Amino acid sequence: MDKRKKGSPTELRLMVVGSSGPSQCLVTNAILGREVFSKDITSISDSKKNTGELAGRRVAVINGPNIYDKDISRAKRKMELRRSKCLCIPGPHAFLVTFDMEKISPNEMRTPELMRERFGRHCLRHCMVLLAYEGNLEGAAVEDKVQKSDWPLRELIEKYGGRCHVFTKNWRDRTRDRVLLQKIERMLASLGGGFFSSSTFQKAEDSVKKEERRLRKQRAAEIEKAWTEMEKLYMAEELYHQKDAYTTSVGAEIRAMAEMDNGWLRTSLARGLGTGFVVGAVMGALFGSIEGPGGMVLYGIIGGAVGGSAGGTAQVAIEHMEARVAPPARLNFNSIFINRFFATPRP
Image 1 (cartoon, rainbow, N blue to C red):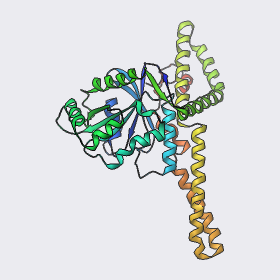
Image 2: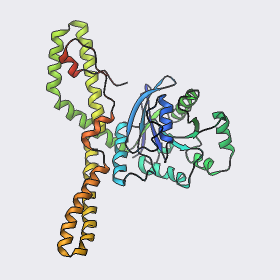
Image 3: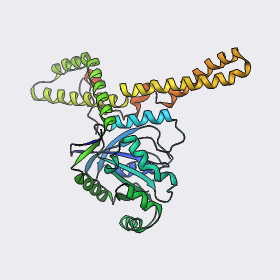
Image 4: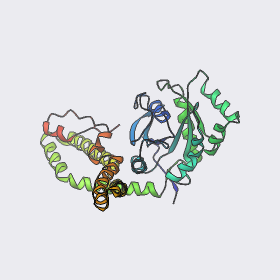
């Protein structure tokens, strides 16, 4: 069941959704004010989470795979869609649906339908269209032009409740940051200040929490040993602060790991491997039929192995998942042992 919940006003969770092309990369850079994605990247196939500030407000920007990216398989897209939800739990405050203003295609008209299918039937209430624009016209003037036009772009924006924002392709220009933040906050105020959630976001949250509990249990001895070392080095108030910093850091590290790898995602990975094996085996058997029954068996086995590998490759390898989260900075403690375990909380 789709639902809206009250969320903390401290940090805004913004899920950036791109149709195709580099617009998703551009808006992510523009919101965070830094080059998260280089100009050479034209599409996003892996889910990512970055934090920063938008006009003084803390934000977490979550990117999922481009909706119409033809370079990734359906299994890979499903896997990364799940991961983007895990990175955004308990749910996004806003979906920022990005388009290149000069390159609106017929496919773009289907994005509202795909948004409902992938995130929940009420997600459009939390959506805002962001248009990447390259020109000298002021943003407000461009938006006014769009609202008064009769072309398909206006129809597309109306499907998202008429909410839109024009941003420059020059992400270093942050003159309109405050305007964007105010628009997002007004949209949230009209919805009672809550974030969006659905049954799949709830499933993602449950899976992440379960993985967090598993990881904490796994690291219990390590944490206890680190605390013992701290008690040898610090006393009273300083000991309290160091333990608190350590606990916060370990919690953030465990949370990041659980968001990137958990039971729900591993289930998706296993299904991808299985589907790849079955498809590969069938195709191998078809080619092998030319060689007769023996060829069908041989090529079926080879095809299954190759297909299974492709299915697994279509997902992101589990052992590389942690590499997508920026490594935390280390605290400058006097003990080499303490340095092994301590990290500052993620920004």
